[in-house]
Amino acid sequence: MASMELEQIFSIATQRELEANAFYRRVASAAHDQATRAIFEQLAADEMGHFELLEKFRHDPTLQMRMEAPASDYGLAEATELPSFSDDMTPRDAIALAMKKEQQAAEFYRRLAGAAKDSGLRDILNNLANMELGHKQRLENAFVDVGYPEIF
Image (spheres, rainbow, N blue to C red):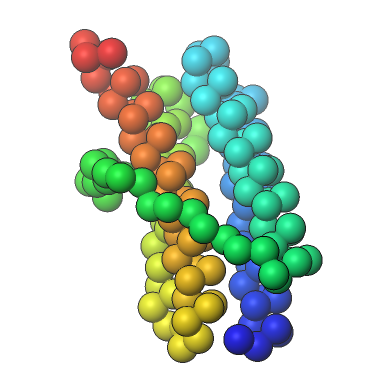
């Protein structure tokens, strides 16, 4: 695997994690509902943790990255429309927006993995997709809890 290609992938991935962190912090600060704010503050912290993890792998290519795909995928993100961000979003819409963003991130990495000719690079990209799918699953669970409170 070419080190330049790997560096580009990690550069894109770390930038996306920083953007996700900023987005989640923005949603948390705009949230009126305390439970929604807490979810997004945790997501922001998780994205910063992902950034730090990616930086470790970037600086030490001997480390092994292994992110397991979630055991289940409800497909809620795929079946949900992408709401627009606003300062007065409902908790349901805020979680739906985040869920869609995680779905899009996973799809981005899966597309890159599908185009990768090098198996090592493909593995890294699939692991990045799995990392995003883990957030998607957490958000889908939160979406069900908020969107269908009668089962919460």
